[in-house]
Structures are given as C-alpha cells and as structure tokens.
Image (cartoon, rainbow, N blue to C red; front, side, top):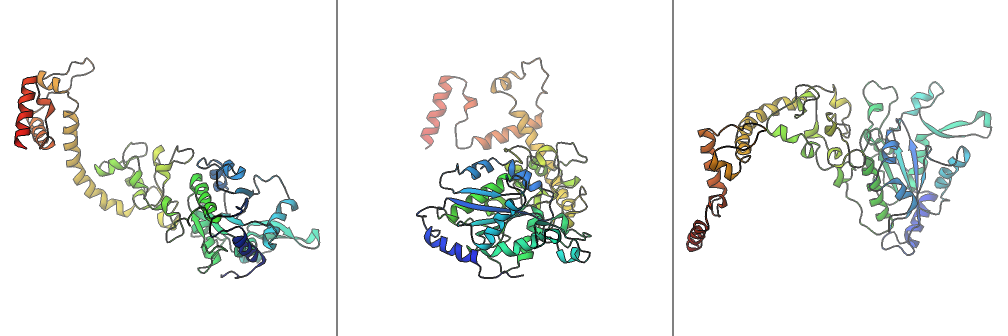
Length: 413
C-alpha cells in the first residue's frame, strides 16, 4: 500500500525542518525526539536485545547524555511509566500533530494480515482500544497505528528479522499472513524526511546495531551529520556489508580444510549446518552483548537469521548447506598441503637459534623431535627466501663475522 502524502504531522514536521534547521546546523537545536515502539507478531526478543545495548546504551539516549544528540522520549509498553489511556494518549498526539517535536516509529515483529483474524471476530496484534461505549470498544490494531503514524514519521525503523523481512511469523505454513514493514507500507513509501524503511535485522538483533543506527539518524535529523549510508535493502551499510565467515573465530579452519563432524569440535562448522560464508551479519565481530558472545564464538552455527530468506531458505537447520559440500572438497585438497607446510614452519620456529646449533631443546616438559632431513631442506629454502636482500641475523656468531657481512652488503649496494 502507498501511504498518504499529507497529514497534520507531516505539515508540523515541515515547519520544524524550517524553524529548527534540519537541513543545516540547527538553531535552536531540536531538544527532543519521540520514539514510538509498536509490537506486531513478536517474541519481545528485540526489546531485550536493545535494553542490553552499550554502544551507545539506551540510557544514554533517553537521558540525552551524548553531546549533540537530542533526548529520546521512548514510548514503549514494557518500560513506560504510564498505563492505559495515559500511555496511548501519546500515540494520538503524534497522529494529530500535537507533539511539537519530530518522532520516529519503531516496529518490532512482523505485520499480520488482520483481515484473516477479523473473519472470526478476532485480531492478531493491537495497542489500545477505541469506541464511544467502553463496553463495546474495539482494539486498535498495530496495522492501523502504522497507517496513522507512518506519513508523519521522521523515520520508520524495522527492528529484528520479523519486522524487516517477515521472519518466523511469515514462514511457510503460518496462518497469520504476516509480512515485513516494507511489504506493508509498499515500495513507494518514504518518511517525512524522505527516508525509506530502515531495516535492522537479527533474531534477535544485536542491540548495539540498533542504538548506533538511531544515534546516526538523530545526528542527521538535527543537521549535525550526513544521512547514514544504507544498502539496497535498507540495512545500515557499515554494519551489514561483511559476511559472518570473514570475521568468524573458526574461519581459519575452513581455510586449512578441517571441518567439525559433530557439535563441540573446535573446527569450522560449515558441515554441521553453518551458513556463515553467505550471511551478512556482524555478530561475531561485535558480539551479542557488551562485545561478548556470538553464535560461532560459543560453538553454534549460523542459521542465517539476519537474511531475508530466513527461515525457509535456510531450513532444515543443522544440515550441511549444498554449497558447503562442494567448497569443502576444494578446501580440503588445498588445506591439506597448507597445513603440512605451516606445521613445518611452526615446528622450526619453536626452536631458538641456540637450540639449532646444539641440536637439542633443554626442557624437561617434553622431547621435541629432532628435525628430519626434509624439514631441514624446507627450512633452508624458507630461510633463504625470508632473508633474501636483507641481513640474516641468526648467522652472526662473532663481532668480526658481523663486520665482514655488513661490509659485503654495503659494498654490494
């Protein structure tokens, strides 16, 4: 669907853009920005992830502790002080253009097809009730709130895979007819500031990804920063341009062709169902909470929860992906040779030059094996290549020999 192009909220925001200088350095700056949180078909995992964010934290956003950023006034049914009509009243103020400040709408969870629920007189997701007769009041669906608030919103943010792509509620066999926020608003939707829907996927998402994106949007909103860069699907480009595999703590095992055959083995997990090489996500490099955790860090596989194709295109989970069957064969062939050569270099560099001359290692911890002729041959070639065109320090036995070698080098130049 295409949203209406005019509303009291949009007109008010246009006025704010002029008076508060949203297109340049704000004079005076915008002091407050309201954030209205809506929950569709969700598990509240996104809310939990955001409350654990630290860079920046939700407390820093709510208190205006970050220099240059306006204070965020969050209207969230879980953490709100108000309840009932007092809480919902803020949503009506935003709809009617009575806030006197810009607002952002955040959707957690997918958007259901309410027409299916209405066939039996029910509903899927709602916030508040409406009706002249309190006894006959009907719930106001989340879909309706989206229709009301989207035209005047400074930005529409979908958090979590359910809101960004549809997620589990939109999977095959689900009866809710759920869809993403983008699908609901339509391809022509743009916010009052000209922004399409912003998507921050994950099941659940990294909380820091959300708070950092909000901070970047606020800087743009007050005119202190450029418009954040997003990819073709509306994801923050600086957060979702890399694959899981590139930063995975187990990626080196893939390179050497060593793969786990069962969970718990400290090797590449691609053969037990990991989709990391093709999934765009920063969970490994950023961590889940406070820079800690992350699926692969704790021995789990990547099941692609940040991707639009999740879950249907990644099922069945914990089964070797088709592409991994072929790529792992090549990796094993090349990795076998790489492992052998690297172990030779590792073994050689576990000996000091003094131990080389003595031919023994002075330790009671173990008995490192003596080098075979093949190891010595390979090492000689490595040493020649390594020190080619430079000084080989481990050959200097005496000061006189050092002087002579330096003289030869300088005369050669």
